[in-house]
Amino acid sequence: MNELAWLAMLALNFVFILISFRLFGRMGLYAWVPLAAVVANIQVVKLVELFGITATLGNIVYASSFLVTDILSELYGKKEARKAVFIGLFSLVAMTALMNLALVFTPAPDDFAQESLATIFGFMPRIAGASLIAYLLSQTHDVWAYDFWRSRFPSQGFLWLRNNASTMVSQFIDSTVFTLLAFAGVFPLGTLVEIFWTTYLLKWVVGAADTPFIYIARHWFNQGKIPAQSGMDTV
Image (cartoon, rainbow, N blue to C red):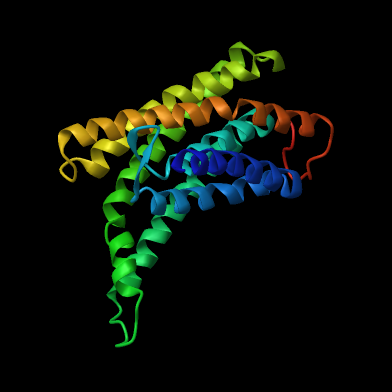
């Protein structure tokens, strides 16, 4: 059952990204980045069994942000992709501050939400801190690497290469940094190692699966089907 739900979530994430891009253009991609950052950092608290291995749940939503920055790099340039990275960072900082401040309020006698919020968001500062560092390092590398491969293989026929070559290494960086900072000392070493490898493996699958969707985004852009915003809309 978990596996079917995981595949459904995988497809739904990519479909939502394409719908957002088709309806709102570049601004739709910017909107997806904070949404993915917030949802992923809530879901990551939950451990699930997938394909016989233990994994954190937030992998798909978080990994989808690499597709967004790759589309931005491909169609609008490195500067616009980097802007999306900082939008994501800001959203994580703001969410962490606001939700932890909410926990400071003394709940009413008939409140039922405080305990549940504390379970999720009380753990959030460490999760968010680890995510911030991992996000900054991996996404900065992804934007740089995509531009690096694009400058050497500019043909649209090599779109799959620059998409995967940048994403796979970036996700390895992200999985390494996040797992160590977020869960070291929380889980036993064996579980920690399993979380790392399963996290990277699942993100690798997500990264490979997003390739057709960047081709769709490129095709729509070439056909003039994407709403244009003021400023640079071609590279």
